[in-house]
Length: 412
Image (cartoon, one colour):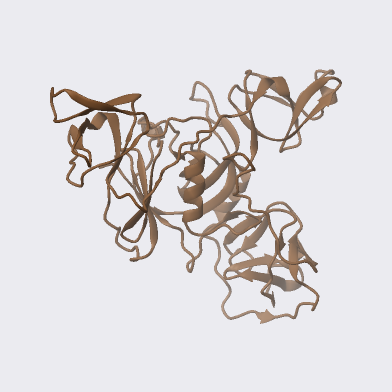
């Protein structure tokens, strides 16, 4: 998906390259001896990269997270000029937290729920024009807040019966008839860890792909099933045919092939980076020159306004989950709106990686411009890239000493 400009992201984007830290080291102010952590008062408490008004944002934190405090400093831009340093380039205004005697603790907001590949629970609207209520009692009075389109997806936090009618409660505190919602069935597809396998690799993308002894009209020697992972010979080539490690030949059109790619200039010999091949709809993650993971993606559709941009970028923000929609567009046949899209990593404006739990068509372009990954792959990549999301944080932005992972997107 693309166009994820909800309020939280706009704020992050507007301040990602904000003001710099004031010159000189701020004066330290002693903390009470009993303080072991600082508790975020509000949901989305802002963490800044420096103790200064207008400093760039470092991230946002869930309400109730107990943050580790390294020191307390005096600097303008906060009531009583008091800031808390949480870690390198991470400060919070003391007015936004409360001191605690308890040890630091925060939820892993990017962790899947038990028995699920997703970190949240969702309801997918099945009936166009389904109503959203402020309270279940408004159902009988026929008083509703708004209506939702078919396939709109909401984050749900519970289910209750009211007057014999079942409702789902949403994360936003609203209510929707349970009968008009269904649970998504996310893909269980997952990529390949390259410990005992090497590139090039291929995935079968047709229901059944024939294997030949030689190109042309030679009799088939067998078939490979959908999504089978195949090892190829290094000299396999990029024409109409590819050669399997055992010597068999297959038509390239039946496969998606992941190949090794040279390390971009400016990437260190041990530094992690990500290579995306749009023509093959593949992603390979690297540590220096060594590929460590390969998988299938779904990039933007070939329409001009939906294509995924090519080039080299660095991640500019990572979010545990993010609402996405195109409700402002009037030039489309139908709009989409999905709450809580998981494992979001933006690399250019509103273009980024994220989990797609609404389809299982990886290996084919079908997004609005973002790079769709299966939930298991999106989580793996989120954990692989920098900066790392601390526990209790919704979002984190890079800083000079902790830059975002480099992403190369190409269409060879």
